[in-house]
Length: 312
Image (tube, rainbow, N blue to C red):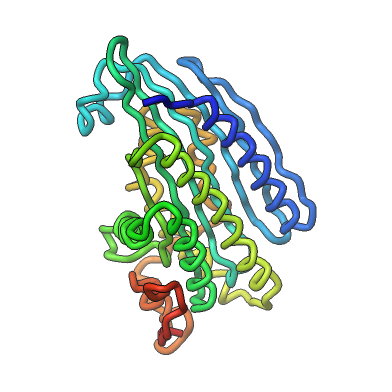
């Protein structure tokens, strides 16, 4: 089977540019800071960060294309077929922390991996997805998010949305707290079904769906009035985001274990966050309703229509 990593790389570079342009427009023209870097073992990338803006307190859009002669033992332990192979891993990773507590944090990632060995076929796959982490629940936002995710999957198979929606719910789960991180979305990995062209097309569809889903939500919420109570709740709940990324996130762990650039890997962390011992929310408050709101559920029906949800 013919694969074309360079075509994927070109798409990812263009994707980084288009995402940054979209986010700059949403943030009233505030520009990203670009930071190019090289990896001693091979490859490199470009990290772009927008910080301390009126709309986005921090937004990062990272491109990486790294190469190596061998994978870390932590990777080959679970995938012994990769032992003794050189590898190339590329992707765009996005994390956005809005300033307004009513605007949700969001994460997206699209990536491609290939491992090669002389005389043997390459081992390759695509991965990625996107997920939404609200601090206050809005049903219309979650339904738009999932309707867009479903539409991105449909041209490539009717079973993909429920499969990758469930995988997302299971993946973005804080086991030590038995809590969901947010309202989910899509998560897929090891995807190489049918052909390279088919799998690459699916990855591109997911990539395009992310800004289509997120931009309308930001426009709805970015100017909502809020006070110190909402701000402190946002900072407290950001702690859950940090806990997940440092304890469970595969991309973070792979990057650190494979000698990746620490500044780029930890770009996902919010600029401000707080923890409070045995924090309790007021009964009946919107804050106390969040844990029920983010429990895994069906937000849209089999035909994509919004379901009646009574969680606000």
